[in-house]
Image (tube, rainbow, N blue to C red; front, top):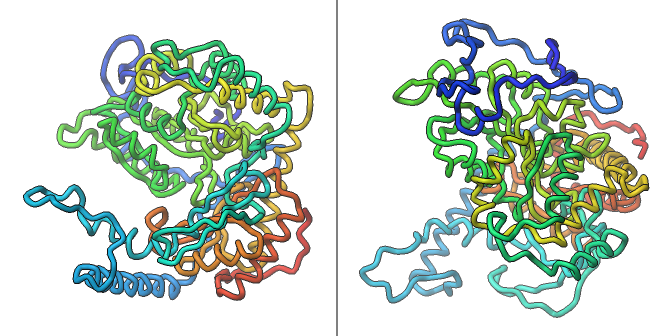
Length: 558
């Protein structure tokens, strides 16, 4: 990384990989803070130094300019006020309904403990108040069962409820809809083709699973082959794969951090990261979403003040961020993250669950998107459930560190290793993306996904919707605010042949409920245009075109 904050250039490691493992400084075994090793940073000098202005213009893929903006259009203030009022009314009626249930004027359909006199309740009724009285009535807008692979089009199972979503009846029919709600970014969620044939062959050879942990008899040749291919794909020394994506974070972060360490986490990081950080015992500081100035402020303050109570220097500081945020559609400002990492001698743990395969000229995630050196990131994490049409997760980086994780990871010790057929699916997809299969199918899918995402986003903005996120992100959230309107949008769109999902509190802040579209390389222009026509109609009917930006009549080219 050059003096101008760019990402190109050879990797020059700051300290040995063993520092990230146990907090020691290189080979001398000293437990001094990495930020102060070799006299690189002095606390007093840091306290007196000035913040530098971060560059917002970056050189991206294909040499074009990428602008990372800290600003996003927000719905008007009066909508936020009305949203709070609507929730207040819902809460009042929720208490009224709970009272009617208590005096038996309304049937209680939720779980109730009985014959437990003298015992402390296992759960408090108020803990499920929101689920019982608000979410339950709109849950059909947040999840729908399907009967096929989540491809460009899906068969959604029809269901009928007569008690406001407490129970459902299934008539045995399905409805065909365009799938705008699945993370099938590259369109590899399919049940036919050469990849499927290879998976079927492995299934006959190895069976459906391994039935053991990695530490026992759960490591076989196809898993080793996958890890080697994955490391080659990511441009790092080594990698290790796990059978569950959520557990990749929640069980491995405690392997890397412990008491006396500091984790600095983005406020919108995934629940698996939050759980792993809590389990580690490390102190956690949270910075504003994708705000590099706030991140630098948190780093500086914590280096100056040290550990709570003792004020000793931190053993190590780890910055944990995601590549693409699945609720916001934003892409992390990786060049600035790397710049801060090198400036303050921190470590970076990057979760690429939604970005690997989905962005970048070669489909290799945010480092490929920004043109950064993968070795500037200490730990790469990702999942195989999105772009790869499979299951599980991985961690990649320097070999010494991956070897340490392989020995000490809770997933490697206690969890069943990844199934051979799933490993083959992942490896087949990687080969397609890299062009190892001898075709250009992978590059065509990556280019089509990028084109679809930009076209769909720009058209939605042109129609007057408030759309969050970066223009290159395949996750496209539209701000709806009201949970009642979210349900109306999802239900109406489904009747018109568009399948999507809503997201509201507690998955999002109270006033920023949204409908989220996920664009795929398997979508055609005709599919996207139909979804746009449907949303244009619904936007007028439900009054959700909140944008105050001047509308452009310019024809957007696909």
